[in-house]
Amino acid sequence: MSQTVTALAAALPLAAGWGVNSLWLRRRIEAAHRDPLTGLWTREAFEERARKSLSQRQQRAVLVLDLNWFKQINDTYGHAAGDAVISATGRRLYAWVVEQHGVAGRLGGDEFAAVTDVSGRAGTVPGNLSVKMLELIVRLERPVPFEGRLIDVHVSVGVACNWLADLSALLRLADEHMYRIKQEGGGFSIAPRYEHGPALGTVNGRREGRSGAHSVSEVAA
Image 1 (cartoon, one colour):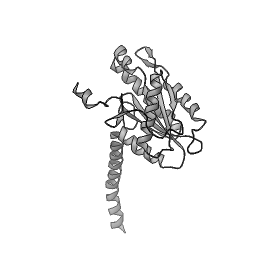
Image 2 (image 1 turned 30 degrees about the vertical axis):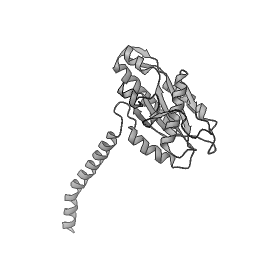
Image 3 (image 1 turned 90 degrees about the vertical axis):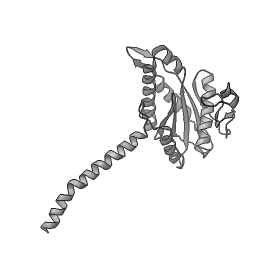
Image 4 (image 1 turned 120 degrees about the horizontal axis):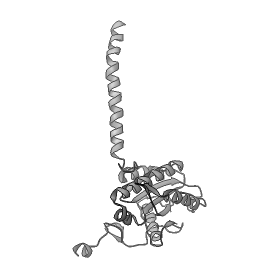
């Protein structure tokens, strides 16, 4: 009996060490999948969690968000101010999406995405979705304080609901509606229930006009 107690006593510190190391490792792995500026999931990590969210039975909405006139913020106030706006946008989006039982990520630059719960019959645009989008925009467009001044923030949001099963198609459709409303000065645009696929041209798998979507002739030029 005494030998068993002694062995257990000797093993406890080792087991505790394993536990601490395992926790540290899990935190390091999670941190590697977080955007350092906003704390949101990176693109790959977001897409993995978004697909899991879409596989559930509840109605979901996929959002693509973009900051309007972000280049002007960098040009006028400097890149540190731009980082402050990106960081604030990420925090605000995260707080909103937690309330909506969803998931959010930073896709890169000033572009974000989210998947949230919505109510309504499958194949229809839920009536409360517009209200949710207005609430989100009000939150995101609060001015951001930076070095004694307030920087105005403006966003464009495209939305597609999951009558489409494929995340890539939903993101592309939401991205198109974000682009359309951005051309009109900002706000939000929800894809109608009968719109089941992208309408804008595609170059190299990306919406024509988006950064990285260049034809061979454009690159050569």
